[in-house]
Each structure stands twice: as C-alpha cells, then as structure tokens.
Length: 138
Image (cartoon, rainbow, N blue to C red):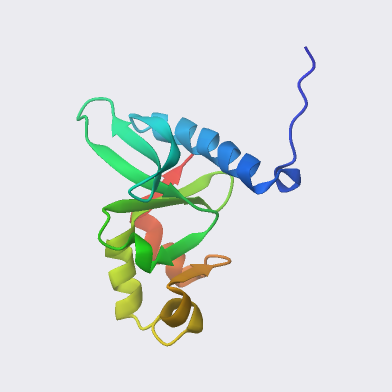
C-alpha cells in the first residue's frame, strides 16, 4: 500500500476538523485522556475527553484558532486549537474569557457586541503568555 501525506490546506473544512480531531486525540492520549467524537454538537461540544484514571471528562469545542463566543458561556466548555504542529491549547472558555474581557479586549468590537463571537487569527505574545498553563506539547 502506498501512503501519501495529505496537505492540510488542501482539505475542505470538514476534513480539516476530522484531521485536527485525530491529531489532538493523539496528544491528549499522552496526558491520559481518551476521546470520543460527537456526531452533532452536544451542549456545544465537538468531542468528549475522558481521563483514564480519574474518569473526569471535558466537553471540548475544536477550533482553528483562539476563539470566544457568547453562545459558549455557561456551558462548562473547553476550547481546543492548534497553534503549531507541536503546540495545542486546551482552555476553559469562561475562565479565559473573563480575563480577556477584564483586559478590555472584546467589548466595543462589532464582532463581540453585535455578532456574539471573536477569534484571533494568530497568537500575539500576550496571548501566548496568558494561555501558557493550557498549552499541550505534542
């Protein structure tokens, strides 16, 4: 059998989400979590991550970048995204959102105030520092 690597940017949106789910599942396994992909968002989650030993589980929304949304508030969700091939972030949405709003970064923008969501196309140094406790190394 001849295996040929895929080019991520050539994948469609659904394929990229599947690809990212598989990649982050491998990373989370290194930290003792198994993952279960959901066919339809359940309470805002794309997948569930359950720890092997503690049986604690996380509801996770998979994104392509640092993202906040009003519709995710109060749902006990974690947001997961890949910054580089080696760096993934898995952060509690509401906790990090409170810090970002406290710093005055979202309020007053059309995206947040009118559309209810905001995402950052890349991680500025201040965000990398803020998200450091939530970084997972592949």
